Length: 480
Image 1: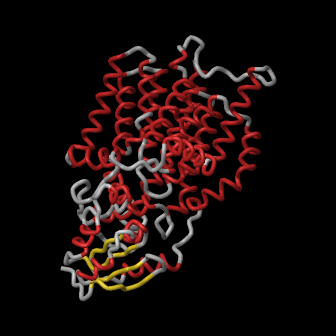
Image 2: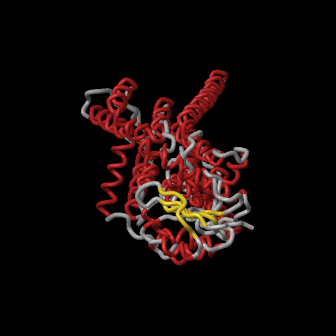
Image 3: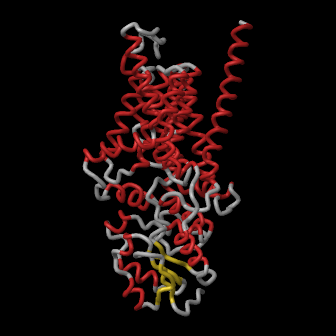
């Protein structure tokens, strides 16, 4: 008994030490992006602007267009407060999300495999290029991943010690993932299977109820109709970015470009499994008791989660490369079930490291703005104090600490295609007394031929930055 207690205490200490070290590694990898002086992606810029809009009292879903789940912007608001509302304070959210994704992956791994296997899974996740792309700059994917993987980790714990409180916790975490970003939904399949494995249907009902409570609690303050229209209908009505075969190709290309280390680890794990089956190497221990039905074994649950997630990404009309991050955790945990030897992993990682770094360097060591980009930010800063500005590159507004017109914070192509942003609406917004500048930077606005419309409401060219990139300023603009 004494020996068992000592082993349990040692195991708990090891768990916390591992988790702390992994969290530190995750944070250190993301520090260069955290302190970057530029916006890193469109989402980073858009949500950075959203954060400073909320500082000014702008309300999500009412004045601030919010295409993600209703939990994301409240989390961003809290992160901005924690960061003391400094220039880069909104990036506290992805920094925390990156550490959380890493630790909950480790927690899930410890439930289904060895300590070494769990460490392998966590390291693969925290260094994944796809994960970095969504947990370096601000994005809703990072918090959604943390909640969803956390729900699966708690569900694996439930299979060992089935209690109603664990089922409720799993459901609540899953609900939080859904209202951060709906693409986290396939984790619900893994949660449901794991809860069903212990044949306690009441606990599954508790979990579903907890998820519903969290979803409604996050959506009701903003109005269910507005939340549904902006975060669900808007995304479902988007034009397809590519065909279904094209989406499959995009997902695979993104994995090759951003996650060669994960793919190498997966390949080595498969090779080790094959060699064990033919007797060339010693077989690893089973990942679950022999009496466990095939459907409820960890490997089956992870494969179904991965397949459902891949299917949803292919089905999603507006499928972008960063969404591939949702595939990484189930893939890494599958590797963890039969982890390759550390030497083989290190050699494989070293072999693909140049390719990995060439594709992930914008997140690991971001470049500053180039001369034209910095000039555009400076031009926005030089507008009259207190004035608003409009741009199709919201990151420049964020870095210039310049607010925009309500509902024009998100200038994505989906909004233009759906008629939410038109040349007439932009002209009317630019004519408002408090608006003094319009920065056209991409084809999204340059294709709308705004120049003659802006001239009619008192604008003239202040600066040109090459190609269609122009900053217009209203003559004699005096904000109220």
